[in-house]
Length: 269
Length: 322
Image 1: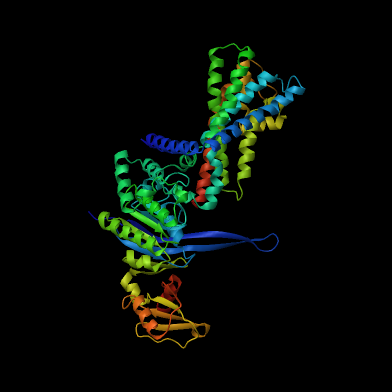
Image 2: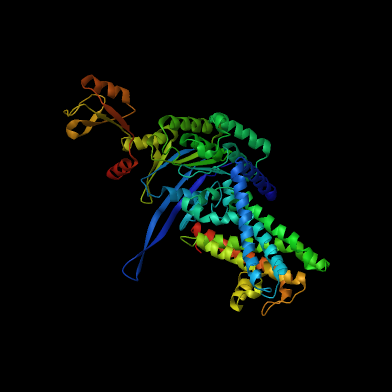
């Protein structure tokens, strides 16, 4: 029942959003082009490194591109669904959260359904394109395991990045000027997640695996797909446990979110 | 069956800690009791005006009974629910209009807001459509349905807000400053609608306002709050007995003049050597037009304004008497 109404509300909202965004063709194509360009520029950063060194963090350009693409698709999916949570400071400042609290729907769901931008989905195109280009050249053995990882990794990655968005959202309730925090936390996480984890210095590597599980969103599963070993403190087999990391990330975000709401309603933190 | 009150407050309190710097390192914490022990109840079908000066505790009370804020102590029940823990069940029974905050989707056509709200409230499509059509018809919104909300005038938007709050046929409608900033015609139109809506469906109304006109037209009962305390709880006529709900006609004359004395109103002040004079009258006994006619018979009137009784004055008078 509940799911049906949420789905219906989401359908109506996305329908109207898409219609209103399509109504201004030029603006629509400009935003789509811009966000595709942003995705490409991010990849160019990686490409630039390989123009100077043949191997980076133990991976060559193709292998690195796979890590980038998997992480990028996961992040694009999470951004499309949860990206709206970075507007919480605006809601707080304008007192719009009160409006959401008098509706019979969980706050988190209302916030993520409050808006929808096609441009966020457009980012997906970059990652998908890179995968299509690099996969044939990687010479992979397609076992059930690798196929499973290829299919599931972007979704588990999306779940992890989604949890980061939600955690940052919960923390906003305690901050006066929160958008910078969201950016540092979420975009920092995604940046770390799209790099070969081996290039991070050890403490950072541990931070972005066991606290903010960014390396699990792409790097470790990619190592498993390519049959490569992991660096120090980061065995590749951890990649199989990505769903466990996702569950852990969501537990953290649930706690942060609950504390945030309790702070807002004055129930004590 | 004994009907349960729609709203029940028992010794309701809410305090906020305000921290500020005192000296270089020390911080002082000051506790402000925004709502300081309010006990009252509202029965189904009542229309209650809730008035008080800015910062008196009106909004804090409204937040506690709609499930936005947890009380520090005391008890609040709304529609039989404990508002914050049961906020989602409660949300289906109440509609809230915040005059200063929009609940419509800013950049979408008005029509879409109603559809989305219907879905959020899980209304069957046929029911949502029928109810929306009814509200659109009564509030005169038909021509505005395809207009993005951001392009609506304030008056048009407020009618949209009220419709949005009523899509799910709530038992209790809470209006927080619904007529703020509206012109006379828009105010009257909204009041007309609310009177008709209540007559037909028996919707309970709880209204905060700075406009005594809203109270006089819509409410039978008035609660007055001052610094967190309820200083008056009674019918509108009994409030009128204790405080004069007078209008003040301010007239600007062409030149400094002696104080005007007319039979329909009392002269309560002159400014600019009598070029601007203030005349108080009770709307029960006479009308602004009759006072003006009397003044015009004596002197020319360059400009005029009509002042509603100020809530602050009412509160002050209540203290003076009580």
